[in-house]
Length: 293
Length: 258
Image 1 (cartoon, rainbow over the protein chains, first blue to last red):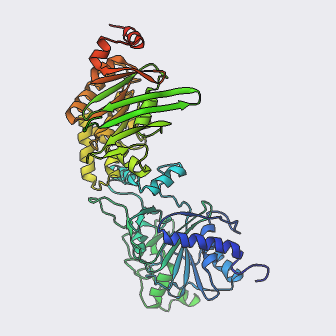
Image 2 (tube, chains in turn cyan, yellow; image 1 turned 30 degrees about the vertical axis):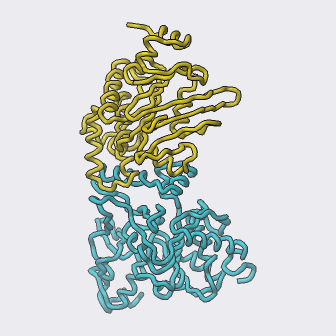
Image 3 (cartoon, chains in turn blue, red; image 1 turned 60 degrees about the horizontal axis):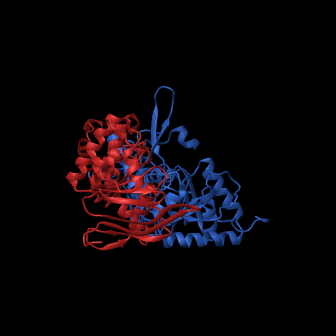
């Protein structure tokens, strides 16, 4: 596309972001401020993630963008097309084929490799934000590794509900040092961050922060000895591919209480169906609906 | 300063603009001892407490603290992380207004357990058991461990604050008017509680108060301040029964006897 620099951002801005990324990788989990730019999409739609992607994207990269695990939602489609037009990179929906995956709210079910980078869109990078309103104070708490307050929150949860009720954006300790918000991914995805071979980058556009987890870094979800961290998922198998271990979306199908549970990771579900897996709600083979699709 | 002095201050000076808050103040505190700082408002009592606890730096002078290993630490030359660690473990601070210290949106148990969790305690059941134990020690029903502080009365809030402060067994507690703003009967009960806890746990305390009766009840020694100067210091009974300085005499004679 003419009139734009490769991947939209000018080279000086990319250098600035790359410097922030290098810093972030050097101090795993530590939030690095950066000069976030105006992007042609609103705050909250992934301005931080899109700037990170633009800064690390090369002409040979394959880009995948997911929103809530799906490749076909508005946000994912728009960002994918944005980079197809401004950078001319190939885009894909297949997790295995992508070298850069920009994501909102999910980590793909397929295990990522050391050839891949995953970019998270982050609305609120400060894990202590709900507990301590002063950013000067939270910076001090990070500096001194004073994270007792976060455990007070978990204590309160167990006291009120009998278990930790945080189901997404579950706080983690990175490299045994920094408390970090994993972005609003479900707690179900937290264990995938631990010792992940892929580089994980986090961008918060409105809050102007970048942070990172280098490959093979420990990521521990906070818990108590007698209330260990546990992941939860809907107690069903995917209606389309039969997967019993993936994270599920609940889809209301009619107004008579009909429910369909499907994999939130659409690529995972499709790959399984192509491989011949079926679920209870799969259309029968050779049915007219199947031919139309 | 002797070998076992817990806290020792020498030559503290601090001015706020033209106003002298502290002029050449010396102070010593031994383990298990309660030192009361009395004087009228504006005499520099609270400033002295802030300086002794390392929260405000003096313009000159030094504050020494002897840690459990016997090392002398210069409170104002310590790195910030070490000072904060000290405030979390060895020291405690009881504010006049318990709302300044408590987290009002967190249950009583969470409030008491916070210092334990800050020290690395990671067992929910034990933290909770300890919280209940401490609530009982400050005469709050253990069944109220899951209540929010906002449903507590003023006296209970102050006792909750004391439980929260003492849960990590500090050696030294700073108290700023702990009975201020409470009615007289609640004050009496609270004083009784503080006295028994301090004696039983062998806690040293620096107590700021304008109430001579509080000082007489709790303190072993007393320092009388006026306009930033310590005008008289000594054993509590000695100072209150036989005041030497004109200002102390005025202070003692101004107390209404019921």
